[in-house]
Image 1 (cartoon, rainbow, N blue to C red):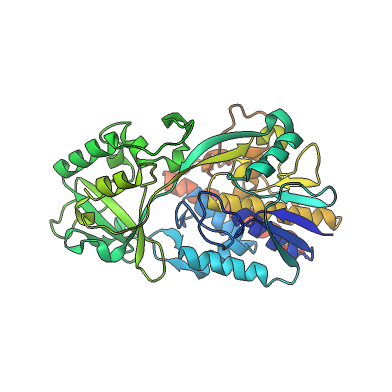
Image 2 (image 1 turned 90 degrees about the vertical axis):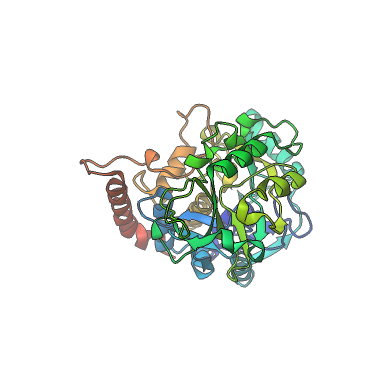
Amino acid sequence: MDVTVIGAGLAGSECAWQLAERGVDVVLCEMKPEKKTPAHTTEYFAELCCSNSLRSDQLENAVGLLKEELRALGSLILSCADATRVEAGGALAVDRSGFARLVTDRIRSHPRITVREGEVTELPETGDVVVASGPLTSDLLAERLQTLLGEHTALHFYDAAAPLISVSSVDMELAWRGSRYDRGTADYINCPMTESQYGDFWTELTTAQAAEVHGFDDSQVFEGCMPVEVMARRGRDTLRYGPLKPRGLRDPGTGREPYAVVQLRMDNAAGSVCNLVGFQTHLRFPEQKRVFSMIPALHDAEFLRYGVMHRNTFLDSPRLLNRYYQLRSDPRISFAGQMTGVEGYVESAASGFLVGVETARRLQGKTPVDFPRETAIGALGLYISNPGVTAFQPMNINFGIIPPLDHRVRGKRNKNAELSARSLEIIDQLRPEVLDR
């Protein structure tokens, strides 16, 4: 009952772990460190490249619900994230390198997982295969998939990462520590801007020189990872209603909300590195330093990594995959991760979780677990496999793809909390079946 898993990102690592925990021997293929993608820099598995945040940990948010479902069902990724978290208010953020190292150590030490290093250019002709090679799948493997899948193979959009800076280089006389609405324990560094400072910054940001990205234009970005300069070009106040929103942040020096606030979130457990929240970018490196240093508290910022943009490729999944991420035309082959059209770290892990659980059950002669649309795990699988979806685009988990309640609830947060409670009740009922090993 060997299964080959291609790719040791979040989806591939989670998939391999779930298979191995259910008694299935796994060959996990990873091309690093022999070959790396433009977005990855280390040899570790489950490397986070765009952000160290796994987003909200609140049950009033759909991604908070998805994380809680995965926790309840024994997710490797959530276990490692919780063990390496850094404070980030109501969000789950992790020490980026500590998280990847922990995932790597647990995978390599599992007796049923054999790691095979090197680039995969062909799919095994026998046995079950899970392709979790990610949105930056190597050219040779992508060509092989094109041959296998035909005209419905792949679509694409562009994704971007934010820069990292040294915390010691932030001018704390012009910034303060605190969290929006006092959630957490002063987990962010807040860098305020006056109206005139913001105006000068916005002008330079919208006219700064971008790096050359072949075939790119502003319409080809995923909304959830939009470069800050693309967002700024939508209007002078767009950033003030987005990542630079000052609401809920009161400057202790003035006692008032600033005109705009740039937030810095810790990127490691030591608190020595931070990222600019919402500042994904594809500006040229000298332009990033010039423009972002216009933020008053960052006038002498030391940039440890500049932001980058890369192309993300995903499948036309509604035409190709079923609700368990299996290839309709050849069920021995499954896909997992962002290449299926689930967008986000947690969503990728959830797809790998479901593929791992269901592949193991199928090999052991068990019936699939019916994760209904009322659960976040089920809603994602049903979204990417719905042949009625037109103009398929990557999707973060959201309550819009989960059926509404059968009764009215006053207030959006209260309604979302009840949707989460309903889902977790179902997950609790499914738990013995899912954990049946």
